[in-house]
Length: 188
Image (tube, rainbow, N blue to C red; front, side):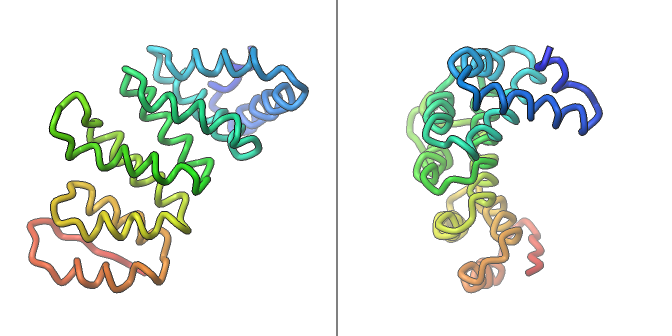
């Protein structure tokens, strides 16, 4: 019933359902609830995956030591939608400890074997997740921007723009002075 309530269009109802799930989680019914969330994030149904991502991200902010390993394991799942939602949840949690794992996802695009490469959509969301994390992720985003061979450069520029971190100014100015086929506007 609580999972169905998450699908309501009313943000108040959705937030009440999330609050109920957080109370259940805090009261010790974790194993059963986490098992249900893992099943939902692996589901064929996009709504189930999205709802599970949203709840796991909320739980992860309070209990990163439990939730982050679950999400990191899901980054290897066969379903792209599951990996995508795991990346989104990691970004929402905002823990700097996932930066190396997200960078690995991003850099997988240059792997020799196709099966070792993550799809561009998941890699793009990993760049966005770094942008949400901020702080120590700025260095990684700058490295992506400076890598002329990276297909994620524009996404990294946009993430840095959102952050507005002063460490990004010089690298962004350097990139913006390059000749390119794609126009990028940065507002700091």
